[in-house]
Structure formats: structure tokens, C-alpha cells
Amino acid sequence: MKNWADDLLMEYTKGRRELHSMKANLHEDNFEDETQINSMIESMTFAMDWMETGRQPDTYNGVDKRSVYLRQFFESIDVIPDITDELYDIDSKQLYMTTEEKKALAKIFATWSHKERVCYIAHEVQKKSFQQIANEMKVSKGAVQSYIKRARSKVKELVS
Image 1 (tube, helix red, strand yellow):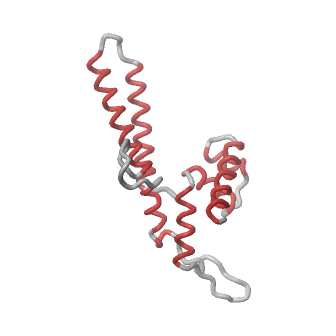
Image 2 (cartoon, helix red, strand yellow):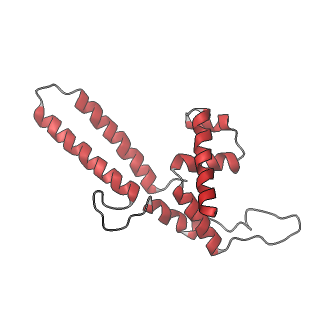
């Protein structure tokens, strides 16, 4: 599940890589362009840090929550539907998630990185193999296993 901040971070990361490549291809005597590119790289890095942490970089006062935008995204209860619409119990019992359970689930989702979240959901919910996930994400099977292991340990830490 991506949100707008994830998309923006990916665009900024790509742009910063392009700036580094431009800087590497400059002639040695082109100091003005190098200065301008360095400034642009620094500004992009500052903005990326802000988006990742949800607070202004290099300040010690203010909201100090990791992935604050992601947390807000998951805490909007509409993102996590009532599971009665999704599951059918054999004994016709009504299944539902309370607001507290949805918030707990949102807290778990917010602690995961994007890759941990994608791998965990693909493996546990969609029942995909490690290799299938690795092929889709274009990473190694070991990386997928590592992401899922970290996600599980974060769940255990929050649940206990």
C-alpha cells in the first residue's frame, strides 16, 4: 500500500540520482554548475529527510514520529475495511474489527518499511512464495526472507 509520500520520495530519489550523475559528468573547471547542482542535491536530501521522518531535519523540537505521513494514512480507518465484508465464517458468526483493533493494525503497518509491508502481505495474505515475491520485486529470495523476518519481529515486539 503506497501513499502519496512514498510516490514523492521515489521521484525525489530518482531526481537526486540524476543530479549526482550530472555532477559526475561536469568538466573540472565548471564550478558554478557544480555549486548549483550541489545546492539542488542538498535541498532534495533535506526534503526527503523531512518526508521520511515527518519533522524538519536537524531540529530537536517538534513531532518526532517515524513515517508520520504513513501513520496518518493507516490511521484513517477507511483504509482498513470491516472484515465482515471480506470473510465468511462457516458458523455464520459475524466477524468485525473494533476501532481499537484497526488502530493497533495501523500501528503495526506504520512500523514496517514499504518493502517489509509488501513482502509480508504478499507472503502471508496472498500466499505467494519467497521466490515469486523476489521475482516481482526484482530482489533476491534472501532479501524477501529478511524483510518478512524483520516484519514479524516488529509485530512480536508491538504485540508483546
